[in-house]
Length: 257
Image (cartoon, rainbow, N blue to C red; front, side, top):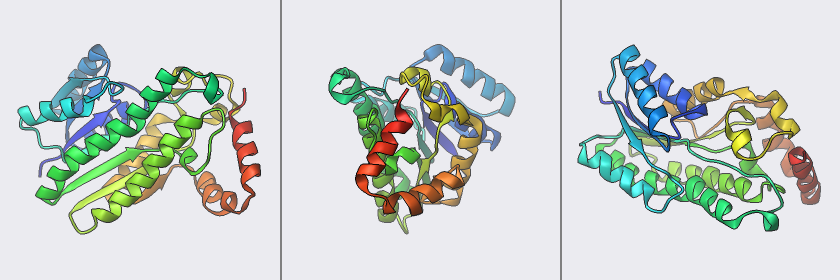
């Protein structure tokens, strides 16, 4: 049975680990990221090690219509995408009105718009074939408002809500949608998002362990996957009972340097 996965943000972090996991299963890959050199090196490594086929698509998802260009390229190559892993995303630290608005607009473009566009384009084909898996990488912060990371938290709230909604819509089609909601992960996200010095990342989990959690949940068709049970319990059973102003203060304190 065909088993081709398209992974965004595949050149590093969790996306890189997803690529290794899928290749280990014998699945072919479409690797998407901005870095041509890193993608080419990864593609060669996985092809040699696992005897799979890889396709590299160098695209910047912060640019308009990137998703449409990716879809056009896979269509032109007659590639059927059986697994879509929307992993690409980034954050940014600081008081919203003081931040560069262009950076936050690009964040929305990557974290929301590109993810939504890719899901729309590929889910149609999956439904027509009556099989497919969609994994959207969200975050535990999607359950909270995020002072000092206002836009990032909001984009992840969208991803978690959106994924659950389409999962219900896809019920009975042979296609599933899963939201992966990890806590802090040890990747390049910290440096890229100007988050050095934030205490929450001192105990960050490995990208490999997070990818394993998400990949397994996707294969099982789970709705939401948490990699940390303590955070899952806190967000589902404790936080909703707290006064909102208290939640805001605690959320801000967790992001302060």
